[in-house]
Amino acid sequence: MVTINTCTECNVEKLMHARNMCGNCYKRVGVPKKECSNCNELKPHHAKDLCTRCYINLNHLDYIKKYQQNKKSVAQLFKDL
View 1 (cartoon, rainbow, N blue to C red):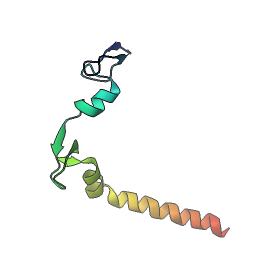
View 2: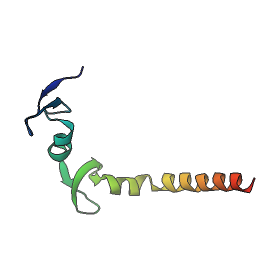
View 3: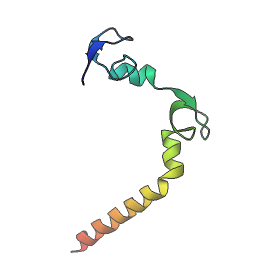
View 4: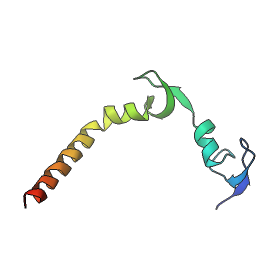
């Protein structure tokens, strides 16, 4: 169910995202920021006490590299035809 209320931060009547804030204010104020255990910067928390960039680099970088390599090899096959 969509609710249209007044945002508690900007006092404008908009669609509510969470915590009685619109989407813009929630991104700016509502997302909790913690110090990343890897890069020691104050950023929005993703998982395992890491920011988004560090989490992806530590846990999913091998999948990303494999996907890109497969994508390049398939493109090369079609290029040779």
